Amino acid sequence: MTESAPAPAPEAAPLRRGRGRRTRTEAAGTRDRILAVARAEFSERGYEKTSVRGIAKAAGVDSALVHHYFGTKEQVFEAAVEVAFSPALNARDMILDGPLDDVGERLTRMVFGLWENPVTRTPLLAIVRSAVNNETAAAVFRRLVAAQLMRRIADQLDTPDAQLRAELAAAQLVGIAMLRYVIKIEPVASADPEQIIARVAPVVQGHLTGP
Amino acid sequence: MTESAPAPAPEAAPLRRGRGRRTRTEAAGTRDRILAVARAEFSERGYEKTSVRGIAKAAGVDSALVHHYFGTKEQVFEAAVEVAFSPALNARDMILDGPLDDVGERLTRMVFGLWENPVTRTPLLAIVRSAVNNETAAAVFRRLVAAQLMRRIADQLDTPDAQLRAELAAAQLVGIAMLRYVIKIEPVASADPEQIIARVAPVVQGHLTGP
Image (cartoon, rainbow over all chains, first blue to last red; front, side):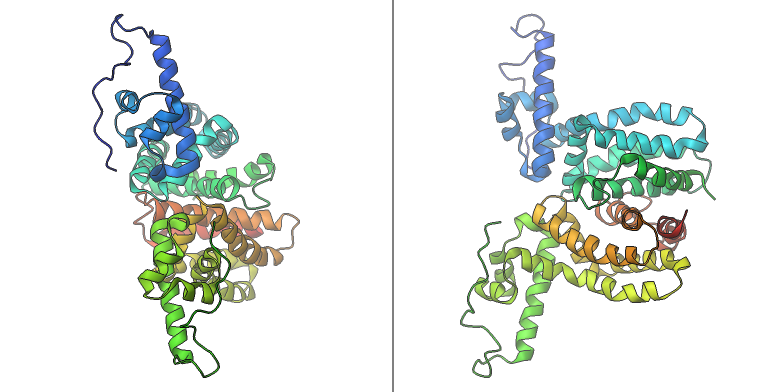
């Protein structure tokens, strides 16, 4: 909350038009390492208990470099979790290009794919654990999930309550993620994804295009 | 995590077979005040950041008295949030006594009733905010929601995958609670409950008794 504004470029700042020692590739590597550490910290500890200083320390860089690359703690958080949503945002064309009458199954499979993949599961856990306890993280969730992903889906539906429908469909998927991956209630936590998808895809479809 | 075991009865312990100064009614009042404070603290701060000492201080009693009434921090938490589930557990007969073909609507209305009522919304927020970040609180959630409420509903269903069906129905309701009451995404956060119930009750029904 009291994070300072983006710091001026620290000594080790990369990409100094050939004068610094770091190459563009090295800088990208450092940036990616900071993001990976940030994702791990946010997903284990939640937004409030994670600090830019802690991320910098775990990544082996100075805090100023983290601020230089990303800005405030909120911006570090958004950059760290965005990786989980960029496949979803890129996939929306894939989802929406197909026939609307199986969009429920395609959307459900995409969401399960993100949660079952450890690379994207970590930032998803980070945003869920953070958004329920912290208003800044909740705002990021609203921007990424509601304003971008659900709005784009709703835009494809030709009904006045399209956004509400998209959110009720999302609620079914968010609730399953909560019970399966976060709180780990059995049997849903260990059930075969295909068994769940077979039951849930028609529900998502019904919310989006049903009567 | 490192809470001590229930303390021996402190000096102010009530109900000492007529020798103490407090009456049974006063003791019940103190107990209720501690629970109300605990609910408020857990729902605002989550499990980890809430301490028995802080609850005792806000309730104007000694920590030892809190331990005397409830035991460990985990037991204080469980007692504090149980109030939200006891109507649900009591209501299960009401839910399950009626015809099975509108159990979806009755269950959905009961859950909305609990969330729309500020008295039960506070402990529900407490358990959601705590369970996503803390394994002890998640275990309480699993005991209250999965083992008691969902199991009892599943017992009424005559299918081999009854428990999974009950959990997918619960997931729809948990997801709506997350988006509407916790993360507050529009339009679902401000929509008329009846508009949501009309869409969601058939989904819950379908999970429980559908093909």
